[in-house]
Length: 513
Picture 1: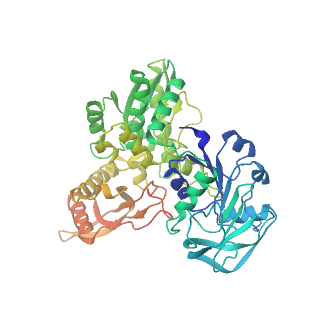
Picture 2: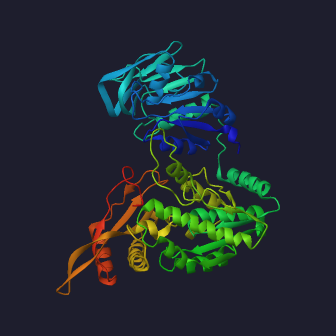
Picture 3: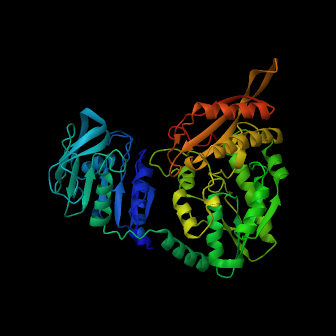
């Protein structure tokens, strides 16, 4: 697998930018998302096969509108502008963009009336998805209009000589019926990508890179028990064998009986030689009185590293720490998006201290979770490991809104366990991306056994997703929710009210903190 086959996506703050990446990866083509601030030098250093300019919420004529170095159009690299990307292309190259009299949002009919590379084999009248208030009224010199819609006289343009293209609609969304075909035209016919971004190629390349990086040094792996760290550990073990030692730290923030199960199952079934460290008292002492979610994540991230550094000192050959960091973690922590702010710090990205003794090995830093699961399958990891729901690095600390203490942890552990067991009993576990309970920092009045209670409120959360970047709340039937609610209230003393979260991502995140 060759990263010279890279497609660069330059982000201008579109809600669909991650979806562009997903659609490209599905074609076995590697891509990276970068902010609009990426320099021409950085672009050239990556030798991309093509560049995509994303959509965005702004007008190209806003005072604070995002622009990009005009030299990008002179690099002799195929380029596709989508929505805002089209309008920016037109403006920078001498065309004209103006406010639309009739804004287009939702489905529209694309009138594909001229032979073109980008719309090759696309139907003459095809359904596309629009989301714009501006439109291109005059195209730059050297460009021709190849499609229009009822309200957009310029719906697709191209300069075939320079391989620069633009579309007013969003080919990355499923509502654009032939969007996949349009992206394939760009990737394979125009950019000449090979489409060799496969699990097997990734594994072979990663093993080679890890061996070359580690050389004679030893490595420890932070094994949480989740999918990402599990697959990372197996991959690194395949690369360096006995040089790898896995450490599971029980932070006291794990789910019911989870740490004990991890130590037993991972040693027996995956032969990962897992060392178990009980650091629950240390973590809880450091979290005492802390309620701010970002502070929680920082404290937990720092404490993990302190322990790993101490373990590394016991073996002077240990120089590296393996983590199962994923691309969505990186994106949310460092705010790649054009004009967006940081969403939240992930403890294995932004939660790490600035100075640490161990160097990081993060083989999945550029991958989505479903891609990691495919790699795990290729590595013959049993499905019982790969099908596990995601679990946040800071554990239950970010599922307790407010102070984290032993009493609240025990309440949440018991309630969460009931919820997950009922999901499994009803055969729903594999249909759900992630399910969990959240203990709220409020109490409510209830009546139990003819007596007044004043106890905690618990929220249940379950979502359907492909990669965790977007998600919809899972539609349980009312009988299931009633069963779970009754069991939790009856069996967990200290909780008297259950609510169900029906927020999607966006606008909400999956986790509450």
